[in-house]
Length: 94
Image (cartoon, rainbow, N blue to C red):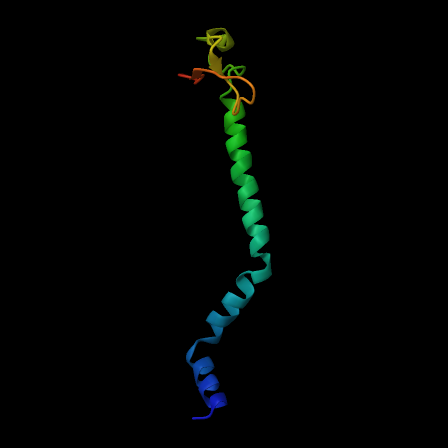
């Protein structure tokens, strides 16, 4: 069988509807944009969650001053550059 006949048979065996769906579903060159936007959305969601559970945010009236429970040897930051803390602060209840 010559090569063009094989190609025509393979093209005829797959449905034209499936080919048009995969061709029009998304552009291959847009995949990096999808990955970047997905990463930005995940990062923004994580950061907003971190801000919402910080020590200066009050969610309940049971503990109106949660920042007073932080001890001097506890760190509240993501990364401490020049300090050395023995413990890391964590919020027990919202």
